[in-house]
Image 1 (tube, rainbow, N blue to C red):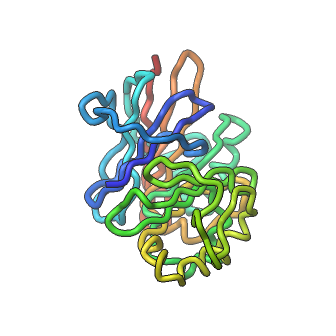
Image 2: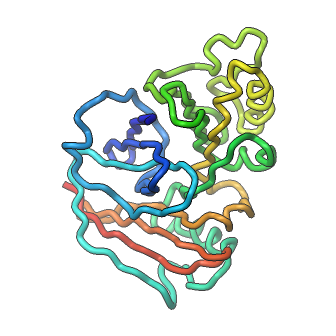
Length: 263
């Protein structure tokens, strides 16, 4: 099982991702700055396990949060009417525009897409540059899996699942075009396409996840096929809300809101 430790500077807390074949547990924050994973007795000391399991979906990161402590205060379920500008029954493109409106009103900085997972690069040429976090791995997950993070349209970090930080991938590209820090978003797909054709790296593309949508970029129509989108934002008095947008046949079916208190 591949492990990823991610630190959120805006919330000053750490987050762990785990690949799983059985369950999805959506992330409460957005992965931007990745740090080295330290194998602590995480499962036994975990404070809270966020989100609900979504069955019958491809591999997806599961989140476990470590200190500072976070306590779930309550959960609201909205299945009719409106909330934060979202209206139950609206289509996914409308929902995306409403998420974007929250960038100003609530300070929302990201949107994670559940189940946006593929077994290769086919069909992703026009989509990859629309995302900020991209995971590449073989099945099952491995320490050699690759985590690419983009900030302001450029590659800002490259990590292996082992926690090793890189300035380029592959580390020793030989004749291959390496993905390097500072590369623009539109340069990623052509480079990855050539890397994936090399037999030494072909299996790193058995699992391709486009996780975090860049809210400054246009709507990505296949997002409508995802069962859930989610984001979180901070409130006053050390409170934080996690909002899960559940879809059915491309329309917003239900909104789950987890209210947390942070210590």
